[in-house]
Length: 197
Image (cartoon, rainbow, N blue to C red):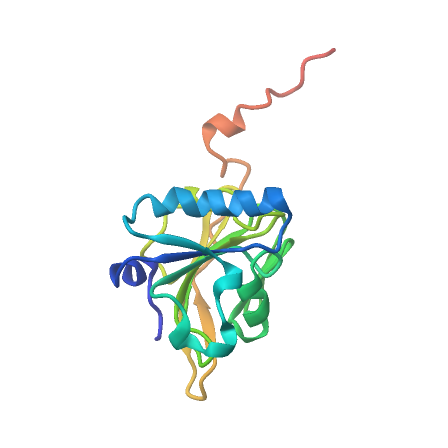
């Protein structure tokens, strides 16, 4: 097992938040706002754009304890690394091994294990235009890999490195989803049946 949890990575020292800049102005602002919110918990933490990372220089040139925000559709670093990562996130889906999580509101929080072309990094990403909608609302920290949906935590997992090198996900059972998965206050609105007009 090669997995490191978000708590483990953050415990190494002050993080550097790397925000995506591939979206339009509104999307870029939404991503930066999510990173700013969390960065307040870490005095001395910095927020840098994805364009500041020189991938050709190798992992040693990355900032210490990197935390990336956004999927391949909004973060240039993720887009460039996409084919070599053990999971894929874009505007419409998250793919982890043979599992697909499609539709709006799908989110992933994971520490991607180090590889020859990048160091280990904490990654917050999701579907939808900004790729990070409400990502900070998901309780996390102990699992190396956590998938969430609009109802909350959906599936946890860890990363395992095969003898020949590739990293794959080992996933637990998905949480059961029913009509009552939503919190009570969300089930109560809108009232049903709708009132006649």
